Image 1 (spheres, rainbow, N blue to C red):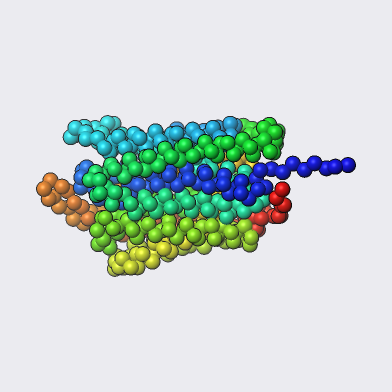
Image 2: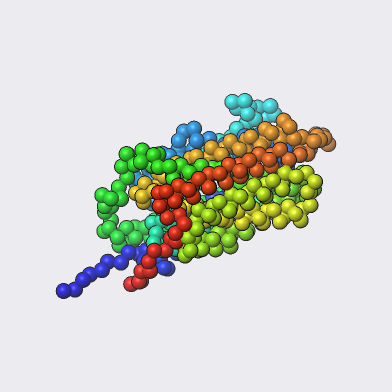
Amino acid sequence: MTEIIRNSLRDSKVARWTALAIVSLTMFCGYFFADLMSPLKPMLEQQLGWTSTDYGTFTSAYGWFNVFFLMLILGGIILDKIGVRLTGLGSAAVMVIGAGIKYYAISTTFPEGATILGLKSQVAIASLGFAIFGVGIEIAGITVSKITVRWFKGYELALAMGLQVAVARIGTLMALATPVPIAKYFGTISSPILVVLLLLCIGFISYFAYMAMDKKLEASEFNGVKTEEESFRARDIFEIMSNKGFWLIALLCVLFYSAVFPFIKYAADLMVNKYGLKPEVAGIIPSLLPLGTLFLTPLFGGIYDKKGKGATMMIIGAAMLILIHGLFSIPAIDSWIFATFLVIMLGIALSLVPSAMWPSVPKIIPERQLGTAYSVIFWIQNWGLMGVPYLIGRVLDKYCITSETVVDGVTKRTYDYTLPMLIFTSFGIMALVVAVMLKREDRKKGYGLELPNIVKVKSVA
């Protein structure tokens, strides 16, 4: 008797790493656009008359639709119902649309004093575009997470997620280091937005290549038909919500990222106001943060795959946040060299926690529920990504202005960042508490967060 063994396309190293490379390109373009305005904040104030509150409102718009209209949760349910191909393509298209609206707003001169719903017209339209873009990139994020689990479960899952995050962080690095030079070279503040909008179009087109690979993967596993076990059911939502481990992961996510990504939005301005750097070079030091994650996230992911200790890694990363932001908040420490050191350390923390956190979700949640589970986690995270930047902008305008001068009709403000940095420190403290609770819950429930991800080695046909 001859036994016929059907091998999945995912058993091929070349195939699964190629699939990861394609979707990582799309996320690189998205992250490049997401943090593009951070180093441009001083130029927005001086050339377009924005305030820190305007900038905080615009930055918080990233989560408006995801939070208040539940677009992320809806996107997760759609992902589990129709799959990664159409969901990923649709989210990439939404990113392009939102980016186009934002470019229109920044590149257009609006009548002085014109407002929409109480906001300056330019701020309102730019915020609308960023809100639409936020829906696209967040749904793309949960789609890529599910894609990675689909191709790498039982293989190098944490390493793959780490590499995908690392490529996305290159986008963040480019967003911090390049916009001001591009704007100065072309002479317009909107020029870097146009450049990255074109890159988003390339990312959208590249996703078609992944769709072709996913069809081949599906054919190799199920002959194009999903099994009953893999189908999403409405009651799965209630199962997810009743899982304590899930809620601890979600809380850790929002607290940790609230101490990192909103900080990145203001990091270049911090370098100008506290450390005396010029705006055109202020983004260089914050750009070292994603540069470090480029190498360390895959490294830590590989350690988790082979050695385990995921819950411990999350605890260490959260503790590092407290130390780093606490040192940033000390007024007497105003050396840009020390600031560089702190940014590098923050990059290490940003490598430790995500490289352990995201691969831990499939250990807590069944695969058929992953799209919805990731979407709820991202939805909770978006409360922080929406609220914290606005909070920091308001705090800066109300409590932290140290001087305000008008030269040739241009208003220039300087800020004391001590209070904002203490706010970021408090998020680190709460993240550490939740990380410790998660490790304790892992001991009770046996999720395996401290165990390796690679469970067996499969031969490649």
